[in-house]
Length: 256
Image (cartoon, rainbow, N blue to C red; front, side, top):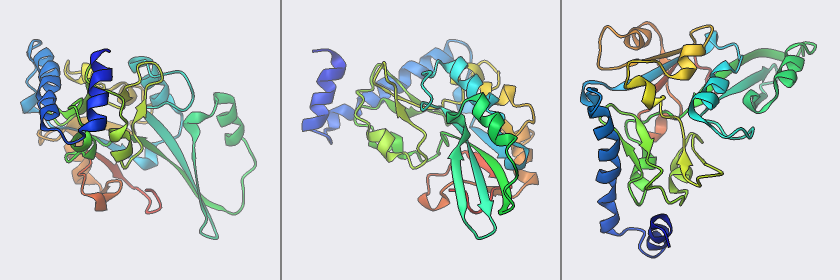
């Protein structure tokens, strides 16, 4: 029996065992020691992302870049980030569909389809892990595989993850999935391997309209801080008090 199978059995019998909590420090220490070795000081940053809904054109380039950069499974229903299209009709009906599950040909056909006269507004909303300041996924992980770094990014150490799916169920944003090959939890990391080197997340780098803005909330001169200052900011599911660090500008009240 390997370590993952052993821990999974332990969780089934002792889901609240205090000894498992000690593993959290080990998982976090592994990631932070790797960052420290490169001269990066996580304590000096607090990362977040802004999304200008009016600028998103639904091109899906961010999704494709994310899949390539992070080796996300090729199957159509695995995403670290995805795009939802909201269609609002005159009678108040709201239709939501994920355009990221469709082929480029399907998206082009829908784009060129005749205009429905009953539609009063259509817009796109990029979604991803909200990198919560108060992440419920971290609270429920029985082995500490899901943890929050000092710069506010929530990560998963796959060497500790036992695939129990507790974090997937706890995430109110549907931002996690179980990797079909490793059988461990996976989600957006803000491209942690890039941002600790001063680079942008892949999705931000390829956005042709700059709908996504990544930055450091600790820096008053940061573009993300200015973005928040200059816009009316909304977050998804604010009543849950998860304190998301993905903030939206011009977000329609129909978006959940």
